[in-house]
Length: 454
Ligand SMILES: Nc1nc2c(ncn2[C@@H]2O[C@H](COP(=O)(O)OP(=O)(O)O)[C@@H](O)[C@H]2O)c(=O)[nH]1
Ligand SMILES: [Mg+2]
Image (cartoon, rainbow, N blue to C red; front, side, top):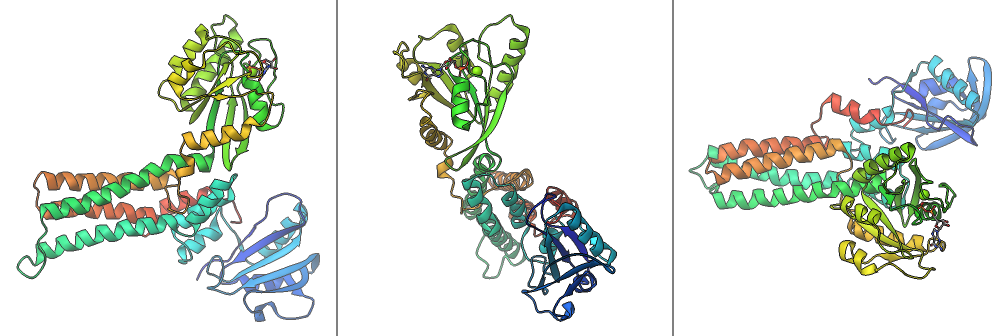
């Protein structure tokens, strides 16, 4: 018997309608006390997937009128009986409807409680539940495609395939150990190596999907750097479509880091316009340069801006040294002025630069394509299933390390039972990933990220 819980499922803001959701064994009892259909029909007699118009009450006080939507277990989001009351979207009235449900016997739902119930009732796997949170926080087209394929179970299926292979190896080893004299095919070193290496490769591929997935999910952190006056702030403003950064011909204008989130060709960019790189005695500007160095360190991609109308200077040289080992998109700006920069010097270090005039805003699209291709975002197969968070990544790392240990055991000539132990460890980690065997603590941790009402 599950508790019956309720929550406001819509945001705490004024809107056309708000929805209070009730789920659990007594959902119909609670709804019956709060909602009276104008037709006089009993709520408890309603079929699943039907709606009825009526009045909403707290005791004998009428609060609002609205629509009641009912779902019968197991055909609901949570797998339990669910009633959803749509009322007018005022914050106060919605809270009153919620309070009426509490008085009628429901408990207040915790964060993600409805999705958690869906998980516990077998309506979705853990990785699918995690994708629900991702879908809600989606800001861009690629991320939408990714979280939808995850919700349809792409990662779960990928994990299941690996688990099946591990199980097959484990079963073969057990059979060989238990019945070596029967018809059991011999577990040879070659056979083990081949099978385990294949899984090792699949786990590395899965791990490699993490960074791309993270950039798509959380946005690509993108630092705009260069010496003063090359046009960094102008580029930032052109990309964001708003005059966020002060543009001025006075060098050293941008000191703080100005940040803006923009959507470029389906990807979300977290742009940071930084202080210009130069030797300076100005205390505030120095702090700005320090902040810029930190941003640079953590950036997924750096837009390195050079002024095409000036030759290379020592501050540009300093930038070169800071950009080693970074993913850099070189930009030569001010193409509307006479060229004084030897572009080959930029190309030699970073590849072909984008030659633009930041005064024409149409470079944004070209830049978007360039970022996608340099970060290989376009290569991410959104339908393949990928690791979407630290929890999942931790499980895959654990599985990979067990598989590598299994390989070392084979190479060191250990008997199959020793290899078998590592294969079992890898299997445990994969089951933790898919949520097949996962502790209550992990589940609580996952649902902490959710909002109340989801
Ligand atoms: N002619 C020309 N001037 C530009 C271009 N981009 C920026 N500027 C000018 O260069 C100066 C410095 O620009 P700003 O964006 O503040 O540079 P920052 O110091 O790198 O942030 C301003 O006067 C801009 O109007 C460009 O493409 N062509
Ligand atoms: Mg600036």
